[in-house]
Amino acid sequence: MIVALFALFSCVTAYTPAALVRSAQPVARAAVPTMSESVGRREVFSKVLGSAALLSALPALAEIDYAGVGYLGGSATIDVNNANIRVYAKLQGMYPNAAAKLVKAAPYKNKEEMYSKAGFTTVEAATVKKYESRLIFLEPKPEYVVDMLNNGLYR
Image 1: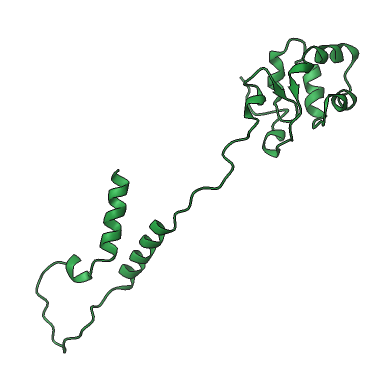
Image 2: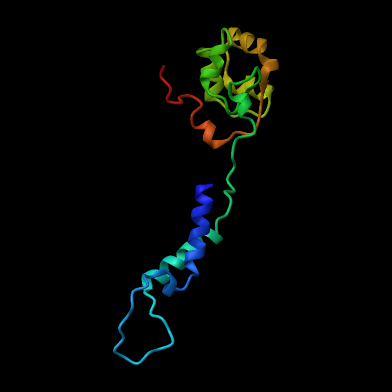
């Protein structure tokens, strides 16, 4: 509310004649009276910039959030191509061996490619098979792939 009032005040003062804004002290002029007011460059520049800032504000068109953020460890379903290695610590038997192989060989198109690329031992493959129904394979996002093995959390 205060910001809106300030913006309104800024717009009004930007278009108010300088004679109304300045103090009402009498001015003694020695020269011939002229029809125009003298307006400083700073005053004009500040009014133009203030008006431009108010009139040209655009909404941010950035991607707000990754659509699959729920599959990065916040639900029972796990996005194999974007989830961090710590997500697999919740799954008994997966962390650290099977999870490390799974994360290092990502991305995968499907579960068959996951089994062939990851290089699981038979015990690790059996463990992954237990949780296979909880795994999905979404498009890898660079901002998540970079932190899959080490996200910088050490506690």
